[in-house]
Image 1 (cartoon, rainbow, N blue to C red):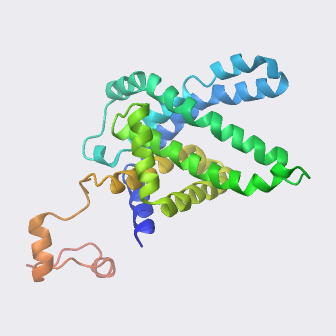
Image 2: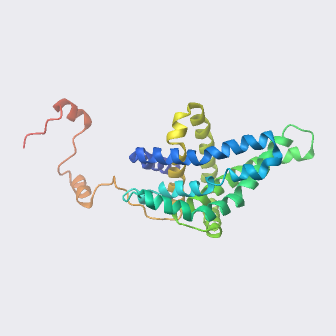
Image 3: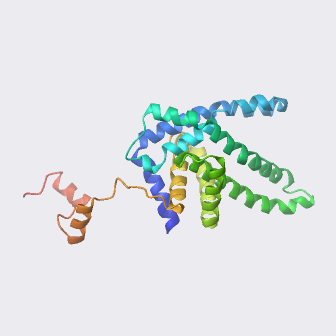
Amino acid sequence: MRFLSLVWRGIRDVFDQLIFMAGLSLAWWICAVPAVFGFMLFLSAPILLPLALLTTFLMPPATVTLFAMADPKRIVNRPDREEMIGIFRSSVKRGWMIGLATVPLLLILAWNIVYFQGTSSFLAAVVPLWAVLIIFVFILSVYMFSLAGTMESEVRNAFRGGMFVLVSRPFTGALLAILVIVVAVVFTLMVLPMLLIGPALLAGVVNRFVLDVLEVEVIDPNSPTVERAYEREKGINPETGIWERIKRGGRKEPA
């Protein structure tokens, strides 16, 4: 199944460079910490909303940088610190434009669902539609951040590209959104996986789906060379199984 194959490739991208991805996830969470305090500030005094919004300043560019660094095309050429800082700086405008274009709509839909669900208002009948819309708007926003990171797309091109990916495979997008929500809930309960690989895993999997729909070629460093593929096809120099290696105790076969 193509869906599971892309999910697995995204997971493998993360675990192939686990230390780097863990650092990337922790860096994203550090940028998100001020937003948590801002949210608490807003709950205590809604009039402080402008101040609360300022605490989220780092999150949009950090999210674009997260997707850029989790780009599977970068596996063979890992970026250095200077390049990461440069990407972060150049992502401030793009990240905020995408955030302003999608996050308010998500918040409005979520508020409507919470407020009208279970009430006698005629708008309660629209709650299922809002639930479907919030799933698709969420995955569209994630696609846009992915395109901003992997393709350096501005908000207009990111929206067009995100809509193309979403319309091309709407059921895949819905499944992906549900998978992300379920995994996020599970990881939140375990805390440590969420901190170490949560954000990077999301970015890695989503990038795989976006690049697959756009038919962007990604070189797999784990794939065999042409020569090795030929040897496998002809049965030349067959690879030794793990059990055979254990039985030999790591000793090489005699020539």
